[in-house]
Amino acid sequence: DGEISDLCDSVEGRKSKSPRPTKSTVLSHLFESNEYPVSICHLLSDMIDAGPKGKAMNQFKSLDEVIQDLEEMKSQPHLFLYNDPNMSTTATTTPPVFGRQYHGRSKELTQILEVSTRLEAISSSDSHQQPHTCAEAIFLSGRAGSGKSYLLNKCGEFLSTQGWVVVREKFDRGLEHNSQGVVCSLFDKAAKVLADMKVGGSRQDAEYSLRARKALSDSLDIASLCYLAQVVPNLLHLIDDIDMKTPQSIEANLSQWKLVFLLCQFLNALLNNNRPIMLILDDLQWAEALAIELVLGEILESIEKQNNAHLFLFIGLYRDDEVSIYHPLFAKINCLHESSNINTTDIQLSAFSKNDLVNMISNELKLPKRLVVELGDVVHKRTSGHILFAVELLNSMVRDSTIYFSMNRRQFHCRIDRLYSLKTDETVATFIISTLSTLNPDALKALQVLSCCGFHTDVAVLELFEESNISPCRGILCSLQYLVDVGIVEIAGGLVAFAHDLIQQHVYENIDLSQRRDLHFNISLFLGLKSSMNSTSIQAISSIENGFKNLYISESKTAEGPVLSERSLLSIAADHINHAGPDFILEL
Image (cartoon, rainbow, N blue to C red; front, side, top):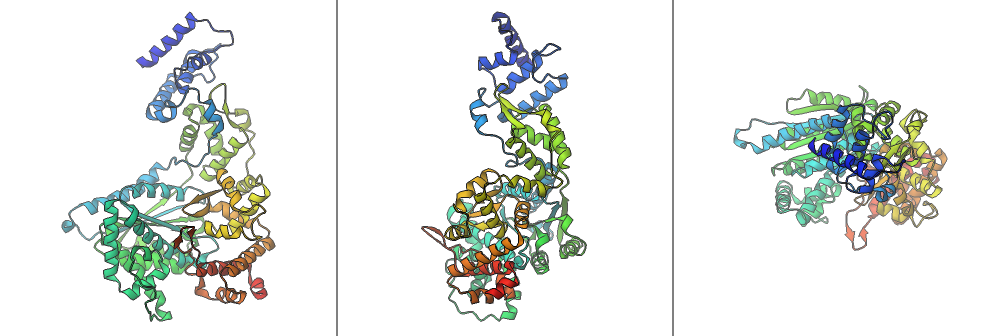
C-alpha cells in the first residue's frame, strides 16, 4: 500500500511540474516515462484519472477492485509485472491462441492426485506392516470436448516427473475391430518407455529398466518372449537377446489365452520392481466388448492377486452420453464397484465454470479479471460452458479482430459492441466445420486424407503419400505446418494427430460418401502396391477377422528415420479397403 501511495504521489508531482498537452492523460504520461510495467500504468491511471471528467479507460468502481488487481499482480507477477512496458512490438506479432495452456479443473485434478498420493504413501511405508493392498481404478467421464484427455495429459506429465511410469493409448471411432491392437499398443508403449530409460534416462531409470528386463526374462521363457514381441515389438529394444527366429509351436486356438497370460505376466513383472505405474485408456466407448473384458477383467483381476497391487493405477476415459446401460463398459464398471480388491473412483467432468473461463481469458490476455468478466460471461452463455466450443469461439474472435491488441492501450482489448451480436452455431460440430471453411483447397484436401486415416497418422505413411495422387497438388506435408498453426492438428513423436477427435469425426463425415470411399480405396491400393503385395493379397487379408489385431508401424530405424514394415503397410491397406466397402473388395 505504501509503494502504491508513493507511486501516486510521484505521478501527481510530475503532473504539476511538467504540464501536459490537453489531450495527454495519466496513462500516456506513464507510458512516456518507460519506468513501470503496463499493468501498473493502467492501475494508476484507473485510480488517478477517475471521476466524472476523468480520462481513465477502465475506472475502478470500488476499492475492492483495486485490491483484487493488486492481489492478481502479486500472485502472478510473471503475467502482470515482468512484461516489457513497451510490449507493442512483440504483442502485435504474437496473437493469443486459446487452448494451449491448461486452466481450471482444479477439483478434478485434486481428486486424481489424491488417489496417486494414497498409493505413494502405501509404497513408502514399511512393506512388512502393510495389509493386503488394492489397486486403484479411476473412470473419468464427460461429453466430447469437455477436457477429459487434456486433464489426463497434464496429470500424466506431472506424475512422470514424480517417478511414475505413465503410458496412455486411445481407441478410435470406426476402428472397433482393432480394439485388441490398441491394448497391445498400450503395452508396447510401456516397453518403449522402459527401453528409452535404458539408454536415455537417469541412473535410477537405467537401474529400473535393468530390473524390469531381468524380471521379464525370469518370468517368461524365450518362446513366450518371442510370442509377446510379435504384439509388443519394443520388447526387442528392451531385451536384446530375443531371437525372433526361435521356432514356436503355439496352437492358433490357444493364442488368445496365451496373449492374455503374457500381457498379465508383463505387467506383473513391472509391478514387482517397486515403481508405480499408471495406464490410461481413452475413448473406452469405442472399445469392443472383448477388449473391455481383457483390460477391466483379465488384466485387473491378475493385478488383484499381486502383493504390489498398490503400485498400479488404471484410468479409463469415456463419453458418458455414448455409454448406455446396455454398453459392455457400463456393466464392467459396475462389477468393479462391487469388487473388494479394486478401489474405484468415478469423476464426471461437468461444464467449465464461468470463473474458470474468466481466469483462462485473464491469463491468456494478461488482463485483470475485472476487464474480462463481461467477455467471459458472454462466451460462457453462448457455449454453455463447453470448453472446446469456448476455446474455438475465443480463437475465432482473435481471428476476426473482436479481440485485438490496442497500440494506444498497449494491451489486448475486446470490442464490446461486437460481443452481443456474435453469431454462434447450435453445436460444437457445426461451429468446427464453419471454421474449416476458410481453409485453402490444398489444406482441406490434406485434412480429408488425414481424417480417412483416423485420429492420428504416422508421418512415415504421409511421406509415402507424397508420391501418389492421393495428396493435394503441393503435397500433404506442405500443408501440415499451416494446420498446426491454426490449431487443427498437432505433431509429436512422429505422429500427426487431430487436436480433438471431434474435428476428425466431422471432417470425415462431411466428405461426400462416394469421394470418401474412393479415398479409402486409393489409399489401400497404393499402400498394397508399396508393400509389394498384389490386390488378391489385400482382399484375402481384409476378409480375415483377426487380420487387424496388430496394426502398428515398425519401430525399427535407419539413419533416414523409421522403417515401415511390409506387414504394417498391408495391415493399413486392408483396413482402408474394409472402409471402402464390399463393392470395392469385389472390384479387386
